[in-house]
Image 1: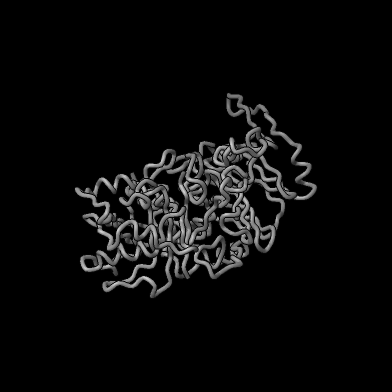
Image 2: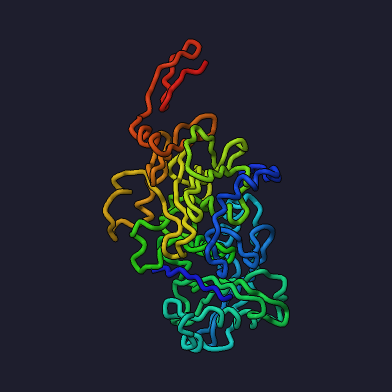
Length: 442
């Protein structure tokens, strides 16, 4: 299979939640919510089964980084640390360490000099197959193969799991594009080994205003791990309200108010213990389900998944308050819909926002999704109604949120309720307690 995905671009703080093996019945409890990907011929999928040939998502993964130049555009004075900092590789490693809870450890070995490509930059610009054109520039596999072949005699290729080729020269080839490619066995062989997972990036991609360099590398590595694009492929798809906005690293790489990695994607990669997932195999009334993000609280759920059809689930996720891409909405829940029948680039994951002036504003190119959905998360006492379900952030206490789900006539009646405040005497003090059904502690 040949996979091409692209983005056109115009410390370690680890919270431990105790990754002990889940109880034997946990897997059975979450299995109904593992919706199936209709197309299992593609490397990247929004559901299960996960492609066994994807880049491994658990353990140490070694990346070879090659910065290339050309005989018609030669460069000198190579500085390894300069490129490590320009690509923010330290941050990339920190990011994955955090979101995988230490389960996925990428390392980056930068070749100590510019790698001279065997052909001129004009040669690569001219040799474009029709189905391989990316922004009118390069054909990815042709370039990454030649770059790896150029160092084959000095590097043991079999020591590496993937390669990142950075094009730092060439008038038309060092642009603002990055893409990930996965090759079948046998398509990228070299004398000292094989590499079938590669990333090709123009050096200018790491200097694009409003886009953080580390996020570009994270986005492309996620593709090698099998995650799909969550932005729209339409030229003007960034304001259609059908994407994940700033949430998750597979959507638009603009804005800085979203989650570090959607819980759904972390579950797909095996980074979330299934004991922290509550699977509801069909919508039903639930009240006061304890939820919390990555913390030491193991008795609460990090994600509630509600299956509404064989291919569709609603996900309710407790957002982090600190760390990479932490939510600016403290103690909040993000609601989104995952539809396995929708292809990547057409909105397989859509944010279900609470109603505000911004989230309900008319579609306009002046209001991009990453701004529209900043107000999407449910803060305490906020709720959203969708497809006959009322999803509510009921309360916050003892370090955890409580989530409630109502369906049918109960959803309609609960939708009209508002939280109440009562006075409670605790010892010699009188305190105010606010809740939908407030009670004074005994």
